[in-house]
Image 1: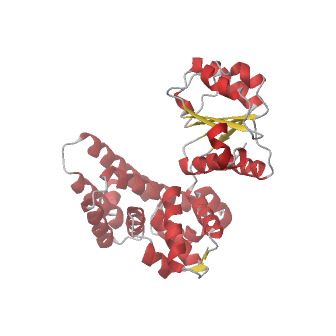
Image 2: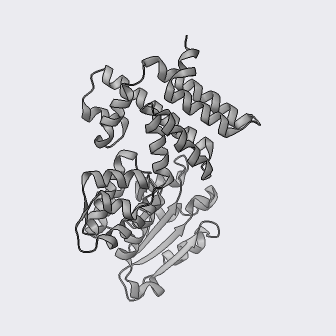
Image 3: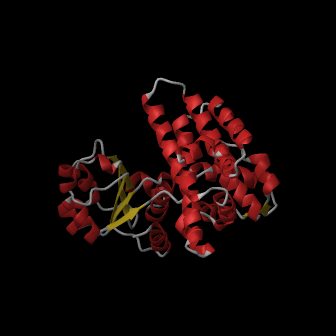
Length: 338
């Protein structure tokens, strides 16, 4: 089951008696847990009908004893096992008999980071219960998430305001939610959030600094790229993280150039690149500034710097400065291909 399907099931009162929530996206997972909690047990009845265990200390015997206890003055009981990824294969095997005969008045909820589909427990759980995975959102899904969260606060964005917000906030959904609440408070009774509102409330984060850096390189603005790199290094940004984003951007530019060469439609390009269509024109313009062979040479240069950063006792700042200048100017990068 997907997370959206779980939400619809909760809204209609179809709550699975066996439920396993897992995945890397902790914000959405925690929100789903809170939704299940709110639907299964009223706040006033939680002292008697809510029991929470952790995988580090739980045993199947203890958990199932509670599961088989009828709720007190309420239609349902909720039993939660957090950090379920810490349960051993033997621990999980102890739950197998219960999966075939769950107590109808009890919702048994497991919450973990990962699952091992090879184990008999998970093969059986997939048949008898409901597994829901929460994956990190792709970059092109963030604007939709932001718009939906803003709608829940009774707000909406201008197109440029949304683009700036997404650049400054990155992909951490918890931070996005916190900044949206600040924005909603700042605009007060106004519904529409514009660029100036975002500039006033949302800080110029490192995420935007990286965004600005890779775009300065892509637009061949060497002096600006070097200035941004220097500021980021002085602020303590790890060189390897900067390099990772530079590599990601050049791969994206290379893919953009190839999709254009193949005559892909704009919608197809945005889908394949996993970006919001708003950012497509910028990528296309940058991709046109590079010859086809430059992408391969640029990535080879990035690999050299990656190896140097991980193995050399030299100065990381010097490696990164030389790389950024070469990428933006096309100097040493092109010479190596001759």
